[in-house]
Structures are given as structure tokens and as C-alpha cells.
Image (cartoon, rainbow, N blue to C red; front, side):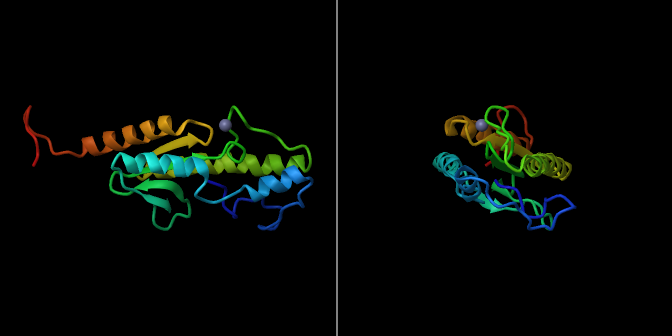
Length: 166
Ligand SMILES: [Zn+2]
């Protein structure tokens, strides 16, 4: 998921962004897609193949402008597929040299916003699963499926050993 448009520093107009300094920077802006990135699609395909059904690119909490990439509404599991550059992955984070201050502020704000989103969702009883775009989809799908089933298992009605709700 890419950062929203409302997280620029207070000293700059909301839509300010420096002109791309190079072809590489231009590519980076161009690659900032909101949804349907290759890692998201791969994860969704695997989850779907396991029979899981979910909503895509949806705000889990009504009235809170934070969208998750994959949302299980009833189980209250929100999945974010974080891009390595925008979300400062520990393995692939890079720090552009041109407009370095602007980038540092921007990327730090994105990470802050992520943690704030996590806290807000957790406070509302949601389970947050964050995966990096560089992680193999099979592994991330396992993690999401695990989170989903632990949430749904907990909600199953209690009964004596051997009891199976119909
Ligand atoms: Zn990475």
C-alpha cells in the first residue's frame, strides 16, 4: 500500500512534491501504485485458492481513512502489503540523495502513519498482518491464513470435547 496524500509535512502544501531529479526518481513515482501490485495479486490469488474470501483495498474502520490491501471483515483481519521503498523495509530501504530532506521526512511520516494505523486497528479489535512486497507469496499467504483461522477458531461456539457445531 502506498502512503496517502495527506501525510506531507505541515510546512509544505499538501500536494507539494519536488520535481523528479532523475529518471530513477521518476520511475519511483510512477511505480507508486495504490493497489493491485504484483505481490498483492500473488497473495490474493493464493488466499482465494484456499477458499478465503476478502475485500480488496478497503478501509477496515468506517470513518477512518486508512485502507488495507486485503480485509476480512467478519474475522477482523487487515492485511497490508508494504512496498519496500515507501515503507522502509529493513532489507531494501534506500535513501534518495537528491531532495534528501524531503524524502527523509516523507518516508519517516509513512512509517509513523503505519504504526498509527496498526495501533488504531488493534484498539478497535482488529488483527493487523503486515507483509513486505519482497516476501514469497506462499509464506505471506500462510501467515494471513493462520491469522484468519486463529480469529475464526476463537469465535467458534464452545462445547464439550468432541462437540462439533453443525
Ligand atoms: Zn524489502
